Amino acid sequence: MDVSIIIAVYNREDFIERCLQSVLAQDFKGGYEIIVVDDGSVDGTKDVLDNFKKYPNLRVVFHDANKGLMCSRNTGIDLSKGGFIAFTDSDCIVERNWLEELLKPFSLDERIAVVGGRILDPPATNYWELVNSGSNFIARQSGYVREIIGCNMAYRRQFLMENRFDTTFKFCAGDDVDLCFRAQQTGKSIYYTQAARVIHYHRSLFKNTLQQQFGYGFMRVYINLKYFKFPFVNIGTIVIAVSVILACIGIYLKSLLFLEFGVTFFSIYLFLILYLCFRSKQGNPLLIIYSFPGQLIASSVNCGGNIYFLVKKFFKMIGV
Image (tube, rainbow, N blue to C red; front, side, top):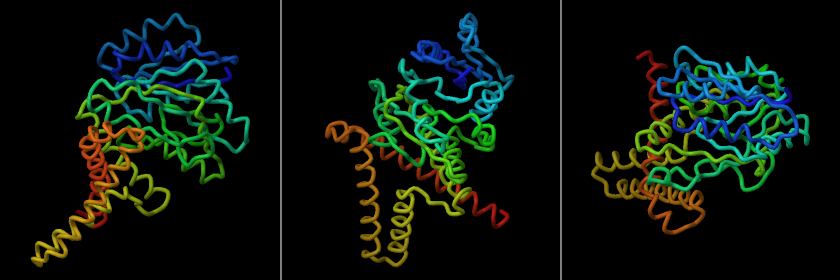
């Protein structure tokens, strides 16, 4: 096989069939295999997967229990045979030329170990899907980047043989960035191509959005400490922390000046969220205004993940 495509799935009976049909329909001139790793699903996912046994290039393996996304991806790598290994998620639909376009950049430079593609949003069907739209933005044009996103990525086989996904991650977030940083530490490059496109169906529930954003915030600090020995937390987290500190000082000293500074810093945070809305909603005024409250909530929870990790790390350092 020239390429192995790995898809981890957990409790996605509602979508996995559409995902696999799009992968099977690839206009790809070389050979490719599809490895689906069911991570202990307890819904009807297994029954859906049983219908795909007739495809000779598609293999399904099952975990006895839920072990997590990173472990599932590693299982797929262990079973793979391709010289290149591509990944998409079970809630994605890939375009017909996705695989061919995703592999093209590898021929540009032997140092390219990781390639990522463009992630599109389907039409939003509820408020939280609208809030999440645009969150998978990487770059405005193809070229070298610092990191890519896991639902649309490919690696040289040799790189993954030497660098597996970190199974100590507690959330389904950050594993893609972790490998990008490892690649750069060893002199490898990451390339982003606009031509390899997938449609990613976002989390549509309020609870799931908050869980995802908290995980992103938590794991970003973990990764930054792992590679840079410094947290480099979300700038919004810093602004919120300064705002709260100034407000507390103002209340304690009964100083209106400190309270005003606190309000000023918090206003900066609101402008940051407004900018994120502007970028993700492509400057559409109505969408920006409508989605702003949800974006504010999601970003604040992301900051909460930053703070939770730092507090947890601090108490561990002092032995509490």
